[in-house]
Image (cartoon, rainbow, N blue to C red; front, side, top):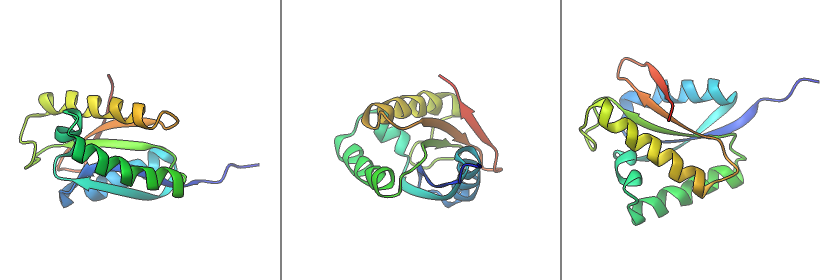
Length: 129
């Protein structure tokens, strides 16, 4: 018997529209999901890696809906090239994305959480700690 595809996965990503399609395509493929619940903030890896309580609460409330109501298959945390809210080079954003992913693993211990770096040309890099 073939396992049915997952219906949903979750993206914690920047509001920047230039990366939305490539991030959704990557996550659909990675999690074998039909839909991507997208939780957007301006530069979420900046605020979440620093533990900003207001942003953390807001993002986690929305991720909880995806996890609990949509039975999300996993969570992707995305940093990206050309971020207006976190105008830092890749080398400085990557630790933020990895730290944010670790924080989300603690908040959602039953979930697989991955960190990604999105380039404006559509390339997506899976980050490793």
